[in-house]
Amino acid sequence: MDANGKELDCGNVSLAHLAALFSTAAVTCQPIASTLDKATFVVCGAKLGGNTIDLGTALIASGYAFAATDVKGNAVSGNYLVAEVNAKMKADGLWATKFQHPIELLLRRAGERKQ
Image (tube, rainbow, N blue to C red):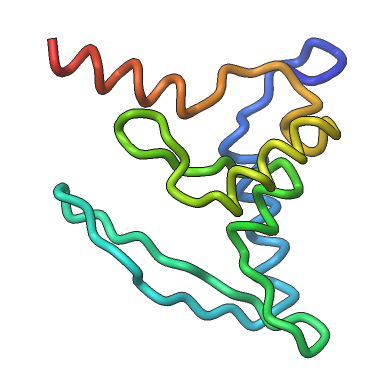
């Protein structure tokens, strides 16, 4: 929920910020790993002002994405975790709203499927 108590679709808000990055920069992605269910993890970078920035870090640091975790809830990337903690502390992006962290939901659902 936003500051006025209005419900937000966090996914759509995050997609809008991702689309804004794609519309202003040349983006390239590189696959780095696959999961057992055939999902592919990628790292994407955008060229901005002669520099390449990691899109994951940019989205997480701005509060519009979250650090991925393994099945035990441990961060997959320390850099992403630091970016998420900083965004949360500053109440940036989605952190300015009230929501249940998506990782909590995913881990709970995974636990329910095991039972």
